[in-house]
Length: 230
Image 1 (tube, rainbow, N blue to C red):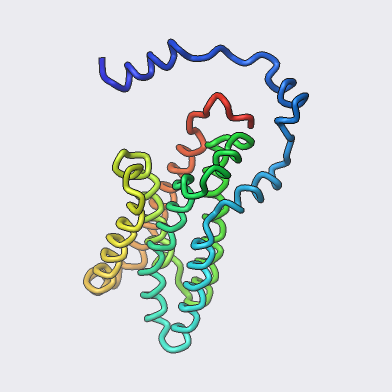
Image 2: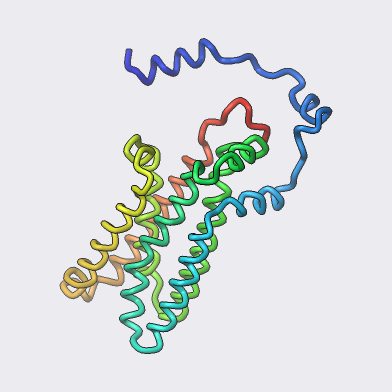
């Protein structure tokens, strides 16, 4: 019997019985406040580290400034910095211990799965707004979106491994590696396949979108803890 099956069997054997009249108990003792989805989203947004917003604003300002001088330089800059934008977003979402006891307290109102998924949704939407703005200004999208999606998918996948959980800044290592790959691709690969570069970018972006959707589904289906209220 492997360890994972043994752990699962032990958990099932000692699993607590289903709570009886839990909702009634929580309401009567003032421990459960029925919040709408918007208020829950707003409450979780407050736990997102300021570095996520600061980096996004700095990237937008820097890209616009560079754009005034050289469009290609602005595209290269945005492509190289997007892995770090993605890495910061995953880091801020998954590293709940950086928020201290307030995060633990919030998780008793919103489930751990709901808390993580909501943060990912808020950060992803804000980052895609950033990339849409940059894409409009620069007249390109895939060169900016693909590095972001690749970093995001890899970081989310690796965060579920022991290495990712034990290494606090592992996301930034992944971001650095992706940035180097982006630089090498721009410098050496694209000139060799200039005629097919557009099709390759679109195909890669489409596949990476599917990879990220898969990661979001995995997060949404995360196993809940027994004490989560919603």
